[in-house]
Amino acid sequence: MPKPIPLKDHDTEKRLVNKRLIACAALVLAISCTLVGRLYFLQVTEFDYNSTVSENNRVHVLPIPPERGFIYDRNGVLLADNQPSFNMTLTRERAGDAANVLDSVISILHLPAEERAVFAKAMKQARHPFEPSTLLYDLTEEQIALLAVNQYRLPGIDVEAQFVRHYPQGNHFAHSVGYVGRINEKETKQLDPTQYRGTQSIGKTGIERFYEPELHGKVGFEEVETNAQGRVMRVLRHTDAVPGKNIVLSLDIKLQEAAEEALGDRRGSIIAIDPKTGEVLAMVSKPSFDPNLFVTGISSRDYSGLRDSIDKPLFNRALRGLYAPGSTIKPEVAIAGLDSGVISASTRVFDPGYFQLPNVDHKYRNWNHSGDGWVDLNAAIMRSNDTYFYDLASKLGIDRLHDYLSMFGVGQKVSLDMFEESSGLMPSREWKRSTRRQAWYPGETVILGIGQGYMQVTPLQLAQATALIANKGVWNRPHLARTIDGAPPVDEHPMPNIVLHDPKEWEQVNHAMQLVMHDARGIARASATGAQYRIAGKSGTAQVVAIKQGERYNRLKTAERNRDNALFVGFAPAEDPQIVISVMIENGEAGGRVAGPVVRKVMDAWLLDSQGGLKPQYASPHIKQGNPPV
Image (cartoon, rainbow, N blue to C red; front, side, top):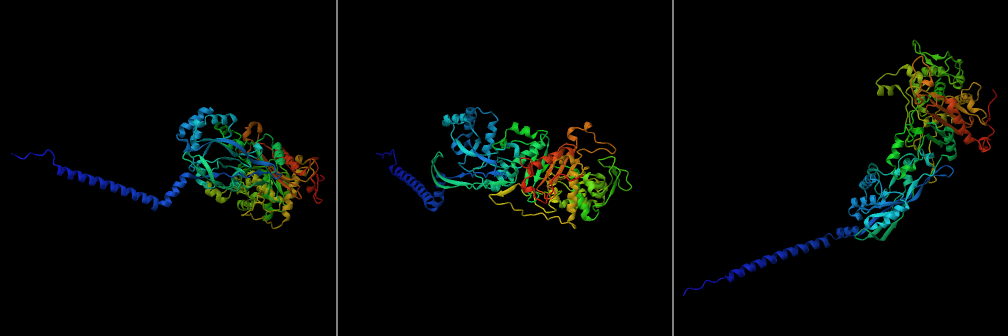
């Protein structure tokens, strides 16, 4: 009988099962070895690294922004301080879907739709993990309550009390103190990220910008432990922030207000300087604006109104305005003529009402078309005789004229701490050749003698040039900061003093400028009537648009903004100058008649007491008071 065939091959099946078990065991062993190896690598080899990462997930360093330094006037009046404000912040790491959270905020607070774009822009700015971004400033009590009630819908949203900049004097010092504003993306890339962590604003203009490092202070830090949701559980270490330094300015709020009142509603600027120290006592640029609008972010509507205004309230005329100086530059031209030996005090020129270059038909007109006859230096300055200075400029030549006026600061920045200052322009042969590709013409030198042509100056430069005459050539760079944290500013690049061959020439020009104010024929004598002190001054009327040969200026046929600018410079008391003033009134037309009274009012505000008498410190025995006999 044949052997039955088995249904299963148990031996083969047993061997197959054993092979599979061995393979599975080998696989499990390999995986186990891999896991053990990985654990060993993480727990032993990479222990230091992973423990640090773990600690960083639990412990965070939060910045403590410093309180910005205060700014005062010379009498201790606050010009810039910090006020508490309740602001809404968002921490992205805690927010989850940040976009949805922001949409909820817009809906809950009933904010305009354009605020969504502002929020998005703020969220894009670089920051550290778990560092909140400030989205809304100066929340109302109602907004705070709405956010509190809806907190469950707004993860990552908090209301924090923060200090924001405040300017209690409003627009009075907007162009000198300046303002702070939100840090933009460009500034974020340039700033030290360590020093500006947690800081929302930075100085944009004026003193706020120039002294930003001193005013900002030093950021502090808190090392905190957080839970998985990012909530702070406890503070591990605390380092206080260092407040910014306080700055006392040389500006005087009473003089500033007096200067603004004297200028009225006219467009223009006033600079008042102490020639003995270079301290700026008043700086007015009109029209002005409220700097508080910029602190937490100005609205598009408000900014457009300021930016597009025909009167340019954001434009700092005192530092950035470039104007032809007109006849206010004649005292400096006179110094150039005297020191170079081209003229003496007794040199006379005949004025028929015009000046002509040899073999040239063109007539350069004197403002007095009938002429002043024979005039010497005193009469030329007293009467602001154009013909005399046409002749003097022609004799000096452009090279000497350029060199002398440059010594007075024309064509260069003269201040110590004014960020926005323009350098102006003192033309030369080289300048015209490089910029216009043309040679210099003699007629261009002639008109420079009366402050016309290519020459452009700022009101600050005019004030400084006049201060050099008052100070007999001693340079004190104009500056706004009187002390920084109690210490005076240091001029690391002092300007060289102007040394004349004969120092008496300073007195000669000073005397001639006094005649402008106090002589019976002085062109600005009306402004000095009844003065309790001697004034040295010089008026200027500068063309805004050119007038054709043979034509006369007619204000009725000239558009208001094309009319002449009115300028005036002066110092007092003339024998011991305590204040130098530069006034520029756009389209004011007559320097002596319009700008002169402004100078007088500012001088009175500084030199006279409340009873109208000369202050004791200015009434020294060697100073002659009142008007001289005529």
